[in-house]
Image (cartoon, rainbow, N blue to C red):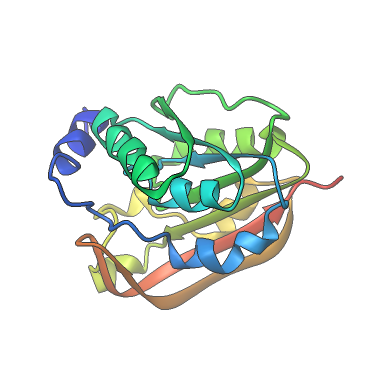
Length: 203
């Protein structure tokens, strides 16, 4: 798409939260793998549900997204929940993640073109502080058979093998492709094919 920010601005324009206001299941399950405190960057954060969850756990959270409309809703959700987040409007196609600055980086359903994804993931490996954790969930190419959410083009759907290659230098605690039921707002609803990663930068 030629205007990804405009696409997401339009999607997030409704009063309702497109993906709901509850955090992603995998993030909730694996949040304990993150360091107990520190700075967390959430990539493609959208309307804020995951950033607000992490902020409520005591993290200093930066929510990054291309959509100003989504980030405004994220700030509203944070206020309603009594949490504090920092929002940054940026396009990951040309955004450089600050090196050695993050205790955690989270990527939930942040589907990027292959070249952009590879560069962002290489950035992740040096952006984490020693001991820092990268947590990712994304749809895989098999998701095209389920049609219960996610991109409709295979180029935006990573495999575990591709992600492993792009994240060279991290140690993997969780690295699986699996099927699971996803129920998140209007957009993700039903049996799904996903890849899940928890990886850390060696100390």
